[in-house]
Image 1 (cartoon, rainbow over the protein chains, first blue to last red):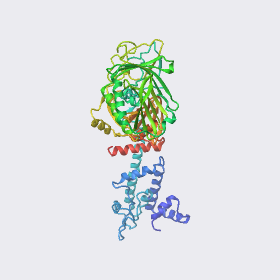
Image 2: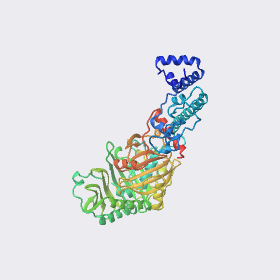
Image 3: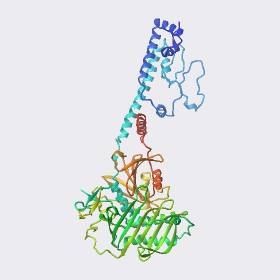
Length: 209
Length: 382
């Protein structure tokens, strides 16, 4: 049996048909590279599963994507397969097409597109044979992306708390009575006074001027 | 210790135009507007502005404000000296006529200038007509009516002998009286008591500043004294020296020179309150005035007393109790506080014209969103 290749992800996801899953299990028993690949996939999925809350909103995702590139959201990354035409963006400005910047995928020739937004697929880019190095690179990317996102969300939480507490800016409680007096004296308008203002007996109070 | 109240203060100036009573019959609020009579009305109003600060007189005024659920009436004894000093003693109708507060001010030339600028706005914004032959407080008077379209916006009765404004009614958009001022008695000539003697003497009043900032013990035996929570500290305010400086101060905080409701920037002053610098922008349309105070910082609504949170056209606004109307809101890095005798609809337009923040949503996602926005603003160097 050949290496599991693209069947690793559906295997980990439990989406392989029963007979295919059984054959894959038999293969794993005798193929260390494939076992490593499956283990790596499972490990990544379990880690991602722990990142569930809070869910970033659509606006947050858009801002994060903007942060990733100077010209706006990144387009899908498309690897170039030797011997085939270089991939082109189907639509959108040509300048937004980015070549894959990572190391060559393959001495095995089994390259395939890795979609930036699909973490699971990035991991699935690992192939037994040459994939040990590729897997580390992909994991590093994913790790950086996840840690970066977590840092930004964390900073957002902290920033939200900070902004709610008005740190960095002095808090202001307008001295309303003083401002009312200033208004009336500067405009000559009548100030009737607060409806709920205090009242005291004149025997002890200074109304004075 | 008690401090003097912010009480009365119906001085002259803007009030002259923004001034003062009586109900307008519904029939008077409509009908064919007469021809514009600015050429006769403006000199009369200008004379009234100058008379308010240069004549000596003693009188009693009734001041009334009608608002939904918050009508107010005040009876005020006024003593005015020809040098601009003025003492107002509140005889509050709510406490059986007892003397409930006193306040003195000294009108400055700049106050008169402000009123004259307001006159220009009045002439530009309203159609004015003149009708002699009326009487107020037993004195012959001339009626000046200000109309906007077919609706009477205000009516002003001017004393034929002295030029003083004897009575003023300011109406709402439908022509119903919103506030009123009226002399019920008036004696021309300097008050008999010299300023500095008697219970209501102005003492050493500072020009343009209410004595509420320099309290001096005074006993009103057996009376109720209305006390204010005004900090006992003198605040000095400096006005802009020129229209250019006035506009520059306004621009420096991103504020408009003209409001959508027709109010124009009439004055700008810098001062301080509680140790923090404050910029005051005074807008007027000739009948009402709006002071917008600008402070740097973030509004602390938890320590506002007597205010309720509202949302006005997407802006988070805290509306205070009492008269004149007071509002405060956050706009970017600044806190805006408006004090005004204008109609609420005009104040809605004011808030919309100034920087304003939307209400803050609660919850984790909203908190993260605010934080992300702050982080991004920080990264962008804002």
